Length: 180
Length: 361
Image (cartoon, rainbow over all chains, first blue to last red; front, side, top):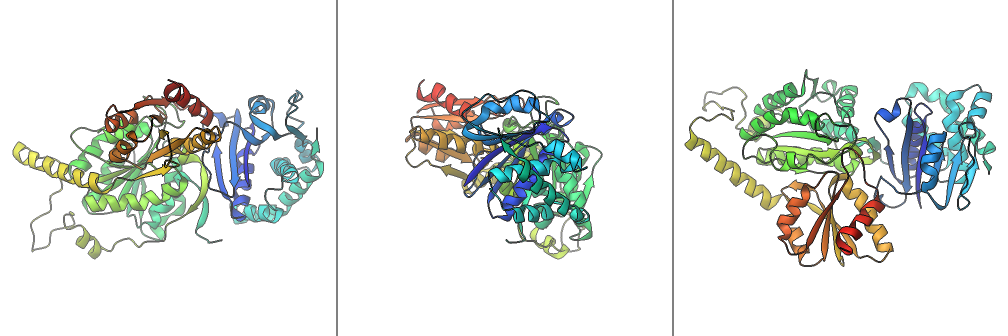
């Protein structure tokens, strides 16, 4: 098993931490993991992205031409990465941030309205976990229990009370993701 | 799952490994993309557990001279910075080399010249392996290509520094510093006691007992005859290091018709290039120098008799390629491919360059 994933959006949307939680979940399953962020001025209000690779075998390059899965959370990220999804690969987007339809027909496109759901849940911070839930529904690359373990591992103890909220957000994402 | 397996950034791994390897002191000044080394050390507060000193100096120059002072007393001391900061440290590094002092220096390279960019680069190869500071000195240079090696090379670096009484450089870059991977941290090694230190470093300036002459640590020698002797001693040491400490890794080289040579994170990207090339039926291998000095000259010379051409893949304008050409000595074509100023090449770009510059040239 190997999944090469790019997660991209605005700085502040929780792109890097979503990638981190996915990487921790992979670690909990004993997989090889690489988490490679874009860093620097890009994070100040511009676009932020992170490459996450989960694999059963040792991972070669952290820098990739193409991805199995692209998760794009704003229009610039869609434009940057839609062409870099492997044929047959998956693109997931949040309907709130995207205003042009995806025209590629050789990839599977999914929509998860995470921003709307987060607003409905009165918890905008749950946004990235809703997206993660959507991803795990489509490609169950890690078990939910290991995501929760990963959260426990990556969050400081004083934030462990937030884990049930995160679990609810992941389940919400699993419910609302739909094929386009 | 063992507790020791963690998910860490390369920079964080260096900090944890330093505490665990029994380091006595870290002196540094923040600069992107390596500030997590100092930040992690500060957060871990090793002065309360192992007694390791962690100090944010007032400048890079101050930090390297604190390293000089600590090393002169036989302590396991280190510093870290990124390219412009390393340039500031070079005077101190030359003095450390000129005084036969062991220490560990980490450079998490960013794009230059000048203040440059904060994005990854490998443009300090020349600076590190060809001198940088003044005088005929050498730095044992380790080039990590994974977070695991960022951790492992701290212990290895200290061991080599003390084995040869010489500064050691970990030459990393923004990719391997910023990315997170699974890492097994080294076991805790106690800091040496004063007694152990006096035994291991009889040369150290620790206060003079009655039964020996004072230990003088200096790189200054005004008598040229003695200074030449000092240089001869350095050169003899460097020869021994060249004979004993060359490290490199081969990836799918057995049947290779073409060879990529790359270090650090470029070598990771090149592994993918080898996979892509092999899918197309191109017999491509990768040789990764782990020590940049001493350079794996002999290994590369041997491949000059086996392969049709080599491509040196570096995030710079062509630096290591000169050492490869010296090793190959004109036997086969050796070209360079690089991206500059903080831009990172993708695997398909490199494969295309291999075709254009070597296979179809």
